[in-house]
Structures are given as C-alpha cells and as structure tokens.
Image (cartoon, rainbow, N blue to C red):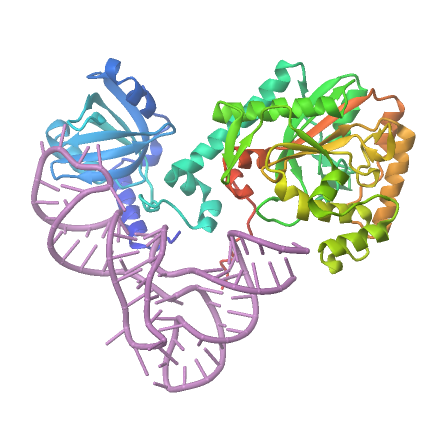
Length: 492
RNA sequence: GGGCCGUUAGCUCAGUUGGCAGAGCAUCGGACUUUUAAUCCGAGGGUCGCAGGUUCGAUCCCUGCACGGCCCA
C-alpha cells in the first residue's frame, strides 16, 4: 500500500516521463481485441501464423537481453508474448522493456508455438493501456494474508486463480437456481429492501432514516412478508434472489449482509418445498460438479433425492438423549438441557425455542452431513408457519442441513389471519420478556392475509452457505467478494 | 463477550534464549535472441502493527490498544 516505496516511486517517475513525452497511458478509451487468451490456446490450429491481438495484465516478464518473454493475464487465462529487438526495432524494444509487472497492455502480432510447445504471440505492436504504480503480490505464493485478501480483493483475484474460480462457481450456482425456477413458471420479483416494519425472520435489523418522509426505516431481514402479499395478489409462483441484512455478529458462518433465495408456491405445502429444495440444490450442484455428489471438507456428500427426513424432537432425542415430551414445560426442558451438558448460564431465563436451538446446534447439527430435512418445529419458534394437522404444538416446517450446515428454512405458510395475529402477539410477549429477535406485529400483513391467501409452500435458501458447501470453502468470507471488515485507522 | 494465535522489506516467510535485522520473489545495475517459479554476477530496500513499562540496551520480556485469524459463548 505504501506510496513511498522505491518501487512506487520508480513507476511514478516512468509514468511522468511518458506523460511528458505526450504518451499518456491513461489516455486510451478502448482497445480492439481479436481474441481472449483462452481462445488463442484452444484454437491454435486454425490461428497459427495469423495476426491476433489481446489485452491484459503483465504478470510475468522473462528478459533474455535482445529477446523477452512475458505472460499476459486476461479474464480467461494467460497467453505468452515474445518480444524481439529484431522484430520491434531498437527503440520500441527498449520501450517494451520499460513495462512493469502489473501494467495493462494491448499486444498484437502473429501466433506461433515455441519449441517447448507454448502458444505465443510474436509481438509486433504493443500499447500501454494503464500503468500499474503499485507492485503486484508475489507470483508464486500469491496473496496469503487473509486481511489483505479481503480488504484488497482485487489483488486476491489477480494473484489467486482459485479465488476467481469460486466466484465463477457462485455465478453459475445462482444462474442454475434462477433458470430452474423461471423455467417452471416462477415469476422473479423485487420487493422492498427499505421497510417500515421488518419481518420474516428472527433477527435484529439495521435501521436507517428517510429524510423526506421523516421516518425511520429498516433494512429487510427477509423478503418473506412481501412475497406472500404477491401470493395473495394472485401471482401463485414467485421468487426473489436478493440481499438481506441482519444486525448480528460476524463469524465463519455469518456476514451482516447475505444473499437469500425465497420462493413461494400457491396450493403447495412444505413437502412440495422439500422436492423443490432437492431439485434446486441438486441443480446448483450439477452446475458446478456435473453430478449430484461433491466433497465438503473431507466428507463425500450425495444430494440424490429423496433426502433423509427427521423430526426435530426425534433428532434431539437421537443425538443428545434429551426427550422433550411436554413443550409447555420450559423449566423441565432447561433442566434436561443442562443435564445433557449445555452451559446453565447460557440457558438462564431463555425461552423453550432457545433451548431447543442450543440442543440442536450442539448435538444434532454437526451430525447432519448428508442432506437432511429436519421437520416439525414447535409453533413457539415458527410464528409464520402453519400448524400440523395432527399436532397443534408443531408446525409443518423444515430446515435443510447439508455438511453440518443449516442452509435454509421452509414451511407450509400460515394463512389464517386470526392465528397469525395470535402468533404476532406471542412474539410481542417474547419481546417484552427480552427476546430482541422476536417478530414485530405487522398489521398491514395481517390485513393482506384477511383478503385470503391460498394454502402456500414457502422456501428460503441461504445462497452464500450453499456456495460455501459447493465450492468446499470452510469460511463464508471466501464466497463473499467484499466481506465486512472494520476500517483501518490510519490516524496515529 | 471469552480464550488462543498472528502482525518483521512491495509480497511470501525465517529469526533474534534481550546486543548493528535475514532469505526467496519483486525492485535497481550488468550478462544473455525460445524462456516459462528462466539463469548467472552485483546492489539497494525495514519506525520489526501502535502506545507505554522493565532494562545499560527491547523487534524479542511485561501491560494496554488497533486490526486480523481460529475456537468457544
């Protein structure tokens, strides 16, 4: 970053000398390329001996006196350039030698193969299209320092091929999901990010302010309540892929802003959403692995349907030995959780939902390596989900787990406006008791339900976590281009 | 919020049981017209994260802070 390093100063002097001679490297508005580096590599047979032009960044220079090899990197890969004094002439060859690693150049010349078989352009013309004043990271090890990799992601992308591959995969994964849904008649929509009342998840929001309306607004924590309004409006199949914002801590599994896919289908239930999940996630995997199997952190994972289903309370019983029989008795549940080994301090004064979540996080989740639908969440922690017909204390809800990670949330949507109001009131009570993540009451959403929402299945998928799984990354930051970091304080 | 670890040249990293700070790549000078982590010869480059403390002397030991990483909550 230093602007006083010897390398920076030398490059600055070169730039000023060029400008002084009327050759401003930053004066070019475009450059006509005939091919990308990959096209040259792949189509050498047809292109041999033909004049071609490419543009990119100089990432290696091997000078041999009167002849110099260089590697040019573009979006697709790299291509070798060969500059010779007897081709370019003394003066232009000397200019060529004044180029630095990192400079952006355009090159034209004939394509040939060296005696070692490397596809190479014999440089006839070259144009400096942008001067790099800062030196590049080291060529062999790349950029390793995680802080610099995130703060200066452009350097990470330049220096580490695998990082580019991750974000290419991310794009393919999202495209696969979007294509799958649109091909099946789902309407892609965009709903408000700035909301007067937030909802659709248990989370604390970011607040912001609208000056002209003189009102506080929230950044959405989920698009759910707006997408359900569209179902009420008769759209029947809708989805949104977008950013949501949750005002919570940052760790290997959480970033304050992340990408969610939510899909809603009228006249469908949560079992239909299981099928949709299997197909969507399977399609994402196909898009990057060409099949339904992949490896995450050493575990071979098979996404072939049908995925395992297990009821939440059964899973807790199976993996922790805790039998939660009476969902009304929070004190008993707390005692059982403490006996099972959960830190009593963390459970003090916590509601049942929290205790269940702790048991699940600690004992169940790490075991759900193969894709699993955990079903039948208690109504207390599912304020937007429809009750099960055969058990009013449980909801027709599931969360999919893969590789030990929770990757989504889905249910048969609660469409009874009277029950919805009661659920919101229970949330208000929870909030009054100190639960800062409880849902606020949304009168306008209840009013919308009062006009009649068909039975509907809804699904939310955490795109970042799925990308993390499908690209075998141990950390969410590796699949988010610019993860949130504290700013560097340059003040002394 | 707690614990552990890290911060040394542009980058990747050594190192000093407290006594002038090291390598590779990069940079600069020289040689070299088919190399590809080019090679060979030579050179420059450091407030050792920041602020205090201990000490004759601190990059090293201690305290605090900042930023980051991992784990836990």
